[in-house]
Image (cartoon, rainbow, N blue to C red; front, side):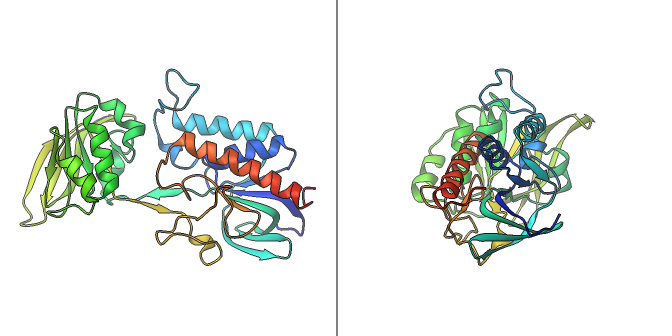
Length: 318
């Protein structure tokens, strides 16, 4: 695949942001090449049902949604390569990306490599992933209306998840390994003041327990907690567990080239441009606040339009 050809645009990442950017740039006759990684679709490929993506009144399987986005991108003329970039460098008026398939060059680059949720590393966490174990209350909380659920974490994100779920669920167990929160005072006070939130202090998740009839028919029934004080264990009833222990942006491959926050999130301006001209960010790689499929798609659209304008403005579009 490696050649000396300089493409109009390379898109890194195949979640909603990257595929939306591919659709828009392809329709603008920019012949984009999308580096999808080993699997198209990102985190949504492991999501069973999405109920809050517009256009699907009865919901949509996450994997199918990404398959449809990929087909739409191809239909409009995008080329997709199942490789990922390992480095990015500026060379004259264009950029050089090293990939598993060799060296690629482009005048503009859209970085949409997303962020990965931090997990606890329990086998049972994987067993019930998206069947009771989740990382987004806004995305999946609606499946557990009127039930008891748990949230793991002690920062602002955990407080937000817990207070959101408290509006839907009968009871929310907030599991925290210490005896005080890391969250801001206002968020902590709001959480502690919510009647149906019960804080499980000095506790960590020892195991996620449930029932499993088949690979696609299983559910969480309870969570076994372990005391960080004396090691004792106990079970709490819960139909779901929401992890709120942070995300890790997939930004290692451009470290030292593109500016990031201390946490590794890409820094962009109001036009989604990074510190390098012609390099744009889109989706969870820079957005650590909303982290929704629809907002990622919106950022992908914006980055595509800005990249097109950059190419035209600088006389680079071929």
